[in-house]
Length: 638
Image 1 (tube, rainbow, N blue to C red):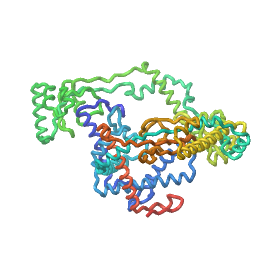
Image 2: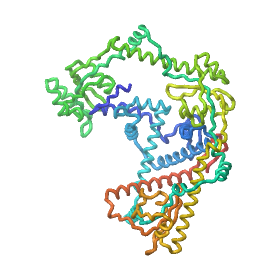
Image 3: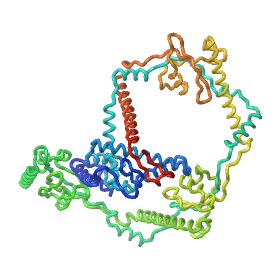
Image 4: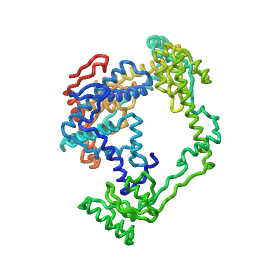
């Protein structure tokens, strides 16, 4: 169906296309509160149900995403947390939607249609595609009515958000103060104690190494692994040697005559007379009849189209719509066009866009390819189909056999002629030919497979590979020999010792400076450099982030007396800085365009914070009752 959607729709054809897909969309909207019932209730919010199916759909998406993120099975505690987070989000959303509805926010059906038409997932060649829309919703098992209702609610909530954003403002004095703080610069000198330099001089003793190894043995264990026996079926390996015979090729060619034949296309011109802009429908009909009479008397079609047509896209081309096949125009227009012979002109044809006078200019006949021309294409197509049929049949049988003989792969291997392969060292993070497939990892390390010795169910690794596996050997974590991890321990001890030494030296510098010594002199006496950067902004990349944050947290110097502070850094180092002065930002020196952009950003942040606070207030005052069996323990809110 998608090939029927032309990428270059212009003029009235584009509007015809909108109407064709727009009316069904509008008809699927549910009225009232936008809720859908059936299949049980997860919770009620102010007496309004949240369907259990909605809760399960969102929860499943969150659980799959978390599994892919952690590459491991979810613990019961994590599943419980996700359940509660999911319900909290649905409850908050419903409370906001209820407020929006009760406050009178409304979005028309046409506005929702226009919005959906802009979503990239439903577009083909830059245009909205109704088949693509239907296919996308079907693939995700989402009813059109539910999706469109959700989009309506989203647009209505956006109205609320826009209203809050529009009411957020800063006084000129407030904004100047914000700019002055944001663009503030701070002038400093600092001494940096590098842990790499300090660590290079540290040599841990054997006793220290032994003690660290004994105390932190859990850090130096091997990973938990299993050796997997598995059977694999690959689409690439099925039906590789299959050669279709002549009869199969002929049958494939004959069973779909249109497959290798392009559809007939017709070049049309039209003159569209629309009602509106002061013209009634009766007046539009009368004008169309008048133009038809002029054409019958020999007037030039292109000239009249340019003069009268309400379709600006084609009027400039004398009404020319180019070549198009069936399925492009609205039904009444298409029927009239395909009833004409080249050179003939129709009587006025009424559609929802007005009255059309149609002229058929030319016919581009369908064009076909011979059997011999497409023989190889047919053979490849049959090979692919054979491979897919074989692959799915084998996969289905493998799944059945693995369940019939859960304690062994031998029966399945014998019947299907497969080789049992082994992969050693499979971990919870995956590995080897299986990659990081989360489904396989969850199955392998489940109790039934890991402890019970059962086969896994059939696992799809990708679109063309499936496996069934069983654990041949389970290897628990065990301590690695000291000799194997000695270098790691030495590095840990050096890092820890360097951090301790850096802090000790930094505090010594602070004490001497506070005792009256000059910071530069103290640094020089210890073989260190006093570094100068010049005034820095809050987001300066020149300084380590921890040091920069400490600099801007420090109080401004009082008079001529600088402020001296020390800060431990994330890499184990230490810095001592002297804040010499604070230079406020000058709003007048910032380009107006940059100030406007900053003001918009601040407004958006404020609006988001206000909306979040408003939503939380709605949630806090809502009457929420949670289904008894939704969580482990019954929970009633408010």
